[in-house]
Image (cartoon, rainbow, N blue to C red; front, side, top):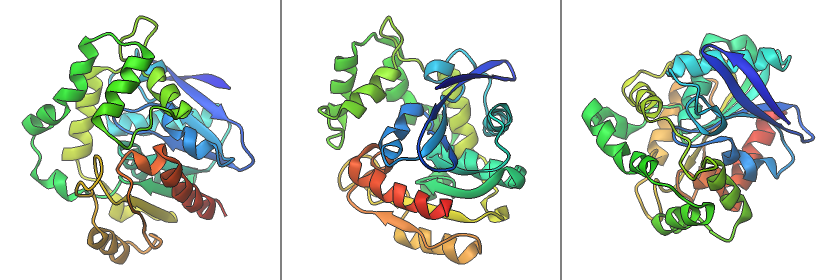
Length: 276
């Protein structure tokens, strides 16, 4: 069921996927959309999955920052009558989850961070100029028109871990597109969020809610260096009392933590533990 939640500047589109669990607020990543969670939803979870502002069905709603996303998530919980939920965030969504749990700990029962939310070593070397360069290829597609099949094929060609025969992949990439074939992604919003996520300071050390961390064995495709090493994960575990033992998903990349059957199964297992 779709909900249109009033937030600052307009409305946010939120999908509630019915399952057999307590509701989970599922927050997608920087250039993603709510269909990211389809593989996890297949495990029977009740998900509250927004398209974040500047993306997909919420593309017309701009003016963004991590703090703004957090404020939007509070409005979503209020609109749906949810006092406190388990939050699962992937990539930038994990940073939003951390900010939500620190600023509004009464609204977060437990927190699952999927390949994000904790400081990435690569971020230390980034500058605003490097961020723009890093996202230039993804933003270049905004100037093109696509068919759903062509858009899926282009993404599958760029990353062999994307299975073009998977109907969930087709639905995910199709949801990115407008009826006239343009990607529904606001350029200024993405860059503002990227700067905030990469150059900002995560308040992760202030977390007080039970927290789980899932990380990928690769970053972007097979055999690429991961965003977080096992040593990084162990360091977070030692520094943060509320953090449970980190879980590594080998042989998947950043997106594959939730967008492949193998990755989603591991993430679903961790989420099940967090819901107990």
